[in-house]
Image (cartoon, rainbow over all chains, first blue to last red; front, side, top):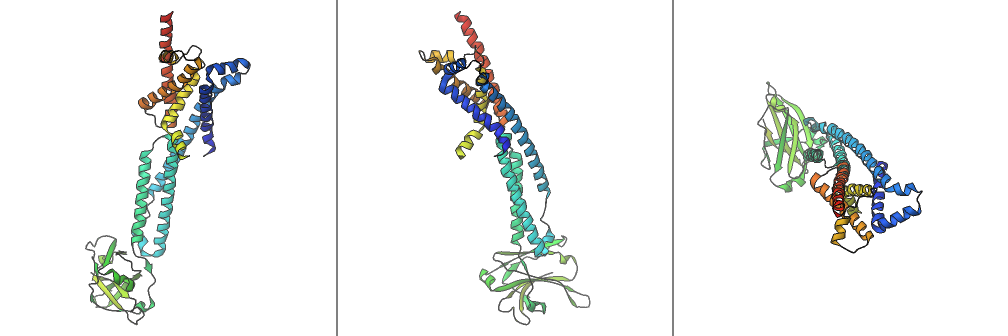
Length: 271
Length: 106
């Protein structure tokens, strides 16, 4: 409760007391009291003054809370413009975590605004329009947090992998749909293991982008390791497939092989 | 506590407060009899205090109900003034009809 609320609450309490006073004692007894105190104008005028105080209190509190509502609406308009979900945030853990933190803060602020507006509704009346918009934004924010968290966490590449790895043809232990649209700036790769029990045995997921030069040389363009997760494993990458002669290898290395000199890399290649 | 907040924060309560305000203001008019002539016919041979109490309970309630149903107030300001104005209108109508009854009696 704020101090300004008292400008309304005190007159309301006095009005209720006056009401009970009139109902309990009746007009006759009140007139008797007045007759006994003929000079006491204050006693006579208390109900009238209370009504005036209530009217002034109502104007005061309404003006204050309408102003507050405008401030809250403007705050929301500023928050509504904020857009944290960018493709580039998935490229490193630091930006990804910062974005999640910003979204959590945004979510908290939106919930605070909603509670404030709900409280103010008692004075200003229903504000379903703005409440609906805030609820939509809260939903969108939690959805964005969900999207970010659904992407696999980037982990430091094991030293054994930096030296190289052995690989054979495409594996059938997981399904991966290679992107067909080569125009976007970023691409989504999603893989799902056929047998979920395999997840516990995996050390890391590796994405390796290689360019085949005209002379036949292989150039490593991008290499990143990710923590494996159950269900869908999702990754966002720059669309290297825009360039010619690029292949993206997506696969995993087992825990039992990770310490080997050239660990075995089970993969599917997208071209 | 929560029930009290719901009751005191409700639009009807605020409209009723407005109606009570109008009734309190009407007490400053000596001529105004409110629903007392009607009540004295409905419940004859009761004390003057009884009629006054009943009038004080009934009139703001009717005023608040009329304002609540007809004006459908939403905010604090509109609720209080709906109660005040509808009760005021009711008081004015009753005052006029009561005067007509008195004139007819004379």
